[in-house]
Image (cartoon, rainbow, N blue to C red; front, side, top):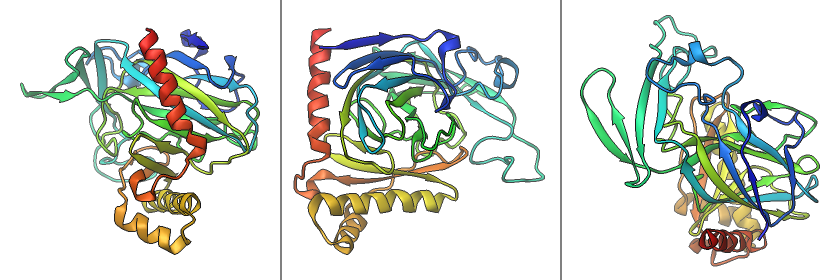
Length: 336
């Protein structure tokens, strides 16, 4: 088994997709062990560490990478299977910002009311018990919630030599912030440049749908990803697959356009997989689908369209990449 381990130094973290050389070249079939820093670069460590004071814009939401995948060319698809996502620390943080989040004025939604307070919440992370502990800042309320690690940001270099801030989700991936991106899921990303140049970051111990306040339970992660290359198969928007479901994403503003992109991609994908007439596929997705929300606070919003694979009666999906990568991941875990 080809295993590559990478732990970036702080100066090696990336803040864009595109515009940076690869930190390493790997071959398809490689299992990558990586450390990812939290969205604050590890600078917010307690309730008195206000991001506006300890962080520097635009150096937020760092990602680990990019990684060059040998043989990847425009028109191909990278398959990234998340074998494991585990908190690297026994604490995590969340915040509110004066002008960021779904329930406050922003630079694009101008309001006369005062901005929200900048407040930091410190969460205890108990990986053994698989919980995180929430503590109210303005009271003695506390509650335990299930640990559900995920990555908010994954993507490849955009097309046309663009460099995009990691906080922005789009067709290349980016900061989609969908809780569906957890261990056991395979992400499919269309290749836009030679090598693909994928990167991963923005670990969350858990997140509610929409990431309403603008941040999740933000945490550094030790993550393992199995990588495969699917030649000659294009992917227009990031897609996800787990053992039971297919998922399409869409990122745009307004939110209904992100919804339309994700639903359109799932309908056309289902049609191509089954041979169904497009309107028949439209009807199937309309009645059998779900629509989990990614984020409603970033520079673009993200929606997910989700459909049980059982409704499609077992078509081959991306040359059965998910099944192969899941097996590779199981072999990796059993060898550790």
